[in-house]
Length: 79
Image 1: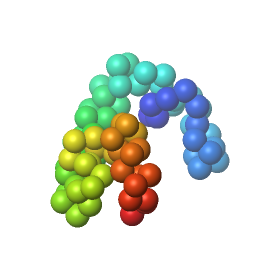
Image 2: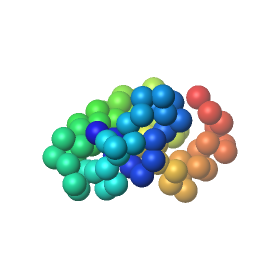
Image 3: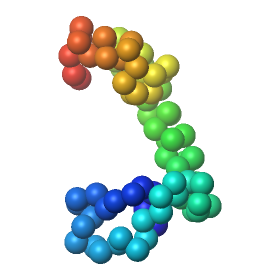
Image 4: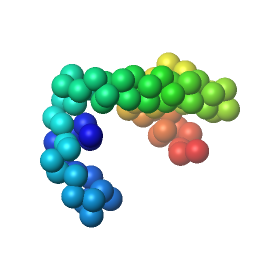
């Protein structure tokens, strides 16, 4: 199962179009649970990265393109 509306390019050769579920985290328990696990993992990873690169404030913005995060990228560049 794939949450979304189209197959990402790197998966096209697998012919999984019939397994794409629009708003999958609402329609499928499996996708919903995987989404929660992935977000929890990402948040913990961003908290650890925040310790290493505090100028980006990943502990708060989790890498989303908030105004604060974009300003930090402009000021400090990519890491």
